[in-house]
Image (cartoon, rainbow, N blue to C red; front, side, top):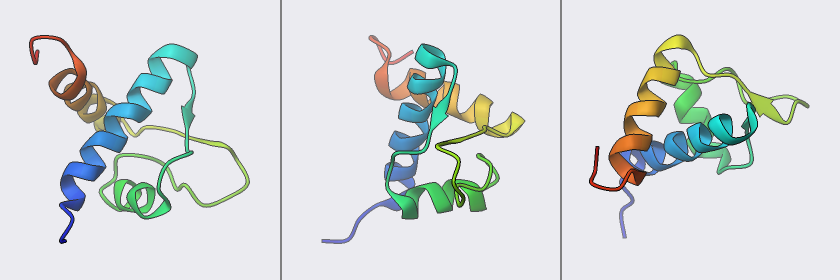
Length: 77
């Protein structure tokens, strides 16, 4: 089975946003390959390191909010 990594990245980005709005932190406890792709796309800070969190870039936060609403809001806002 071939995976659609763009859809996986959208789901991870949306879940990162959920963490951010609930806790104020963007925890990096997701698949390392997905986190690396999000970093390469310029949406989050580098996930490699001892810190347990990452930061959204300005573009990443906007994209995360949009994908979160599209994937998880009732009515598909």
